[in-house]
Length: 115
Image 1 (cartoon, one colour):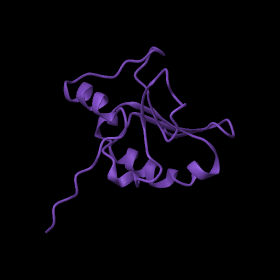
Image 2: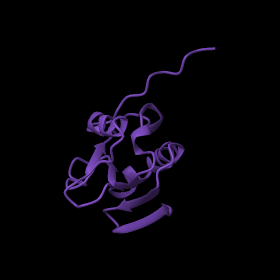
Image 3: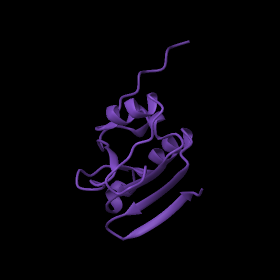
Image 4: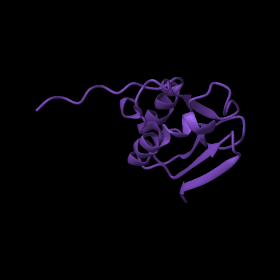
């Protein structure tokens, strides 16, 4: 049986993983522990966030630090929206407390997992 390949942390993920491994919950400038997961460097700047590379399949990222947290996946338009299915499945597999998506191009929010 082959070993599972090591998953990589997304940009800003190392800091979040360190907070979670020490038993903490991330705090941000907006006053709560919500984490934004995005493909765009301009989204979610006042929140703790991780930024993904569109060229890396979501299954190659480590998302354990999102377990038990409120998570908002922020994307822009159809191109990034096509990447959502696999990303959402990866995030749901670590059991966030709450999960929603927000399409900044269409100003739509979809709640996928409620409190």
